Image (tube, rainbow, N blue to C red; front, top):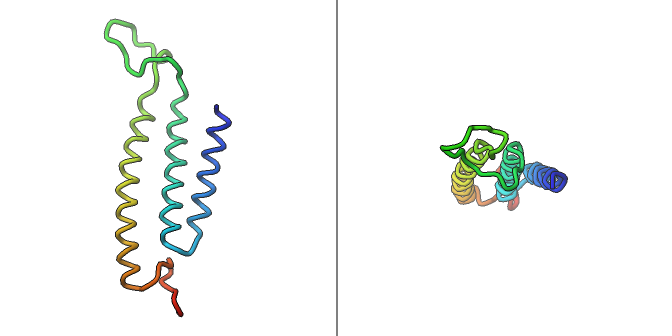
Length: 114
C-alpha cells in the first residue's frame, strides 16, 4: 500500500511540475491542481494508515494515542482542498480575463502572430 501511495504522489507531483512548465495557462492551472493533489496525499499519508481504529477518543476509556487515528492530517487536507478549490476558481477567472485582453492563452501573452 505504501509503495502505491508513494508512486502516485511521485507521478502526480512530476506531472504537475511538468505541466507548470508548459506555455499555456490552462495547462498551468491543471499542473497546479495536480501538484496540490500530490501535496494533499503526502500530508494525508503522514497520519499513518490505521486500519480498524476509531477516529476519536471515547469518554470512558484512557487516552492512549497509539490506539486512535490521527485527525490532524485529515483536517489539514480538508482545509487544503477548500483553499485549492478557491484558488483554482480565481485562476480560471484571471485566465479568462487575460485571454479576453490579449486574445491568447499563452503565459507570456504571445500568440496568434506575435
